[in-house]
Image 1 (spheres, rainbow, N blue to C red):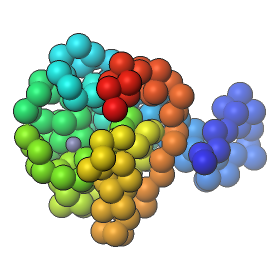
Image 2: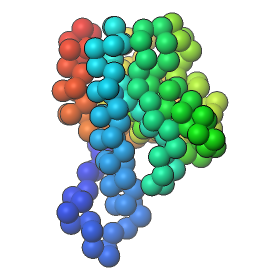
Image 3: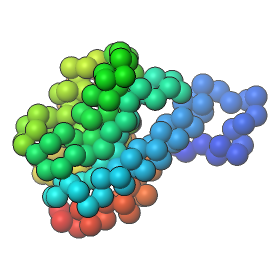
Length: 167
Ligand SMILES: [Zn+2]
């Protein structure tokens, strides 16, 4: 499970690098949740996912799920970073839902993330689709990417309640 730091307490000089990273993770996942909400009602049977790519405190690109058959949120965030001229190698990708691991109407996001040189992925909830459900995380880890899951899972489940009921 993820440890959420109390940011009200962690403003002291005693903040260690682990706590600082956890505070950034929380900030960026909450941001991703808001990005996902922008796609609500436009994604058909896909979940309205939010994603962003960051290096340290700097956001390199943001995205959300396109209409069915078009890009998923993670790919849109990577494309936004590329359009802005950012090199995403060694950066962290945040996504509210586990990156998909199989080619459906679009290429697998997990493979795209690996190909772009992302070295850390933080996602909120697993994709309950029987062909994903942990397989996306496994694919990323097998490629040497550090993966954290579970951050903001409660609010993300609430945001995607309708989609989750369909599984
Ligand atoms: Zn995907």
